[in-house]
Image (cartoon, rainbow, N blue to C red; front, side, top):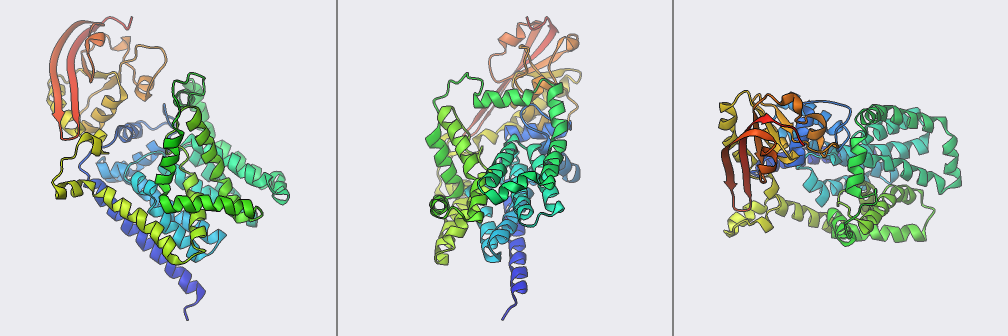
Length: 488
């Protein structure tokens, strides 16, 4: 009979091999989609060219990670996306450790395999975003917190502090980790004693120390990230949204998969019937509050489906543990459904070609990432003919895409900023101003250029660029402007 230690080592090796193979498969899929970067991905790449402690809409870690990846592997599409591909694999490994810590090695392996195939993980692994480091740090924080509560070791408390600090520097959603941990401590009289533990407060201090540079950056720039967050969540009272709670709930079910979503709901019933189970208390403490807060936001205004994404980590562990109470086929069915959905999504273009069906705009989820390289190549000779000109655009989409696609050209891109308060990162960091009054401007826009052109002494239409695809159309006016007369 195989020893327990050998069996555990075998499971860990199996998981490692699976994650390596799955990551390689996803790299192949990402490289073969036939699209460029999404606007957010292109914007994050531009952040990586100018490393800082903060950016207009997000904290800095995503820019740092892309800078590291591209410094090693170049600026190609896969190099930009690599941090997400690796971090989701790493998060799956942390889910394995968490499941093993709370239950056993078999449950841990099932949890990791399940998380790696969640519809959310399958989709977001292909696109670099702030959710990748956020979920990695959240999983690391929960694992370290559970060990710290059980063993009270300095290394676990300090690891939790590092996870919370770096997680907050990835996405501010990480700040809710503290509220979740506090809730878990407060519901049990014995655990409440941890609130007097100096090791806990040292971890909190370490997290605050890591976050401090970003706070100072925001202070120096009039807190643009907080203003942006307030704008998208409508906490300032200016709310013209009717709410999207049903859409948000559907998104959470879709992110987990149908059987896992049902299993997670069942675990809430288990918690109600057996409220003293410390493991279920811990896992629910790091899922239900976040889901509840974002659901309330969805009722009052609007919420994106990924705003509660960290909850999927402990929700996945809960669902797998509940399903494992029954015959293995139920867990296998839940994973198989998600795996089938992943393969269908990854190869939907091949399916359309096999069926000889046109891929229309309504059926193409990648249409927003198409056409930008071709548009940039049409712009390239115009910029080459005016080497001393600066390029000005009035939205971040054009600046981000053109800067990435034309990264080999030494061209300055500036943002048109007619209002005092910056509306995006480029208006904050590289606004067009009177200092460039004497320089020739190439203005690029997807709308009517007249409102901007009238602020200059002379204008010359250089081109109207178009790229037409089966599911998209890209358009851009290019105007040569001279003699800036000011915004007013």
